[in-house]
Image 1 (cartoon, rainbow, N blue to C red):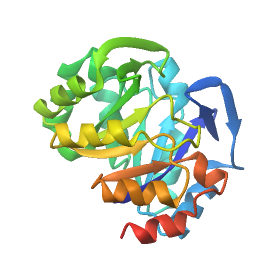
Image 2: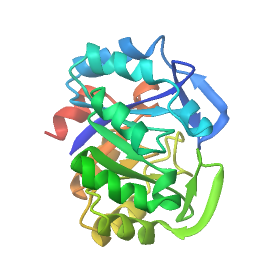
Image 3: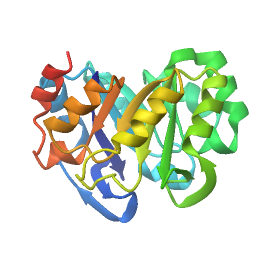
Image 4: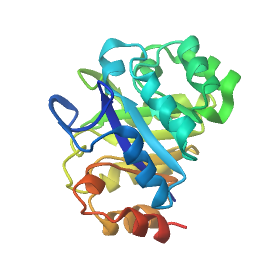
Length: 237
């Protein structure tokens, strides 16, 4: 299982939110690049990054910050937030981002997902964020009546190979991941599933690993030091 430490970005700074609420944003480290380099030193191969400003403005905002990580570390950057058009996707992939996450557009513009997968293949992932099993969009501000499994199956039919699933009620809480929903999703589609939200300690990592998930995104647990990143990477090799 791949461990993806997370850096969420507002105004070029690394922050964390509680349950996706922008009013709870707290800066968690001095700067993005030095934090990414620490993750690299811990043995990580991937990093999960989110343009929170982009999520709200519906366009790339903090691109310079992400390209700094691309150009100054060996980390593979997985990036989401504010990516709404083929131009946005091409802009990031040509700039060296290894995996682009399509979130809100997966629900609102599934044709774009299909076109993106056709053009960029495995460099395209879909982020499905759910509240009580129903998909939320636009930085989690908008709720829908679409079940997360139903959307995942549509994305699978569109050729998507990677899905990042977040249970919003768990995000930033250190309350443990929603293993039940993740297991159901993993059993329902052939896509590789990356877990996000609630991961607290090495026990959670071992549980997700044993459930045969593809990856686990860790944010607050790293910054609060309830999870040793190096240990997490080691046990998942």
